[in-house]
Image (tube, rainbow, N blue to C red; front, top):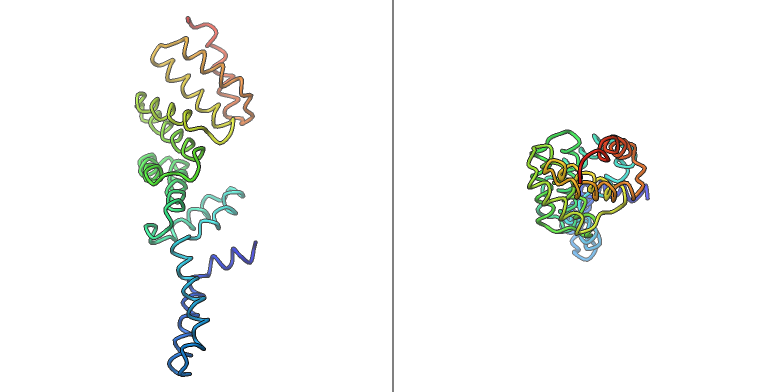
Length: 217
């Protein structure tokens, strides 16, 4: 695994070096076929760099919580338009997630929309992106748009119960704002029923529980 990550990191340089070696063998050694293996492997490595990108390297940074390292890998991609479409979608989604962590909501929305337009490899990933878009709309107090995004996220499906609980809590908040108290209570019941363990979501449930039983509906 470590060797593969090193290969991904340096495959462009290695590919160029092999093509140069092939040229040297071809023109100075006078034999195309002697140079052919270097040409072939070099071109495959260069193609892989641009077509698949270095996104695999981000996993290690994400698992260790090193967002700066993950962002550095993303910024190293100079020609995202050359990447395979599903991988390009993941690229824009990751850029959107990092922008949201930095509270750059305009950048997050722009990149997530690009990812959604390209189509997600899995429905759950699409649902998670739609949920993020809904949260961005909530930050902007665009309640109508937030509701549309979050309802779409729930229809598409979310990757785990933590995301699902977050979506139901957001819908509860939206229904409270719209004074649709019966619907707000139903969404809260669904969120609590999932028994999420993420501290932030657990705290939100405790806060909402303090007053939701006292509202009409």
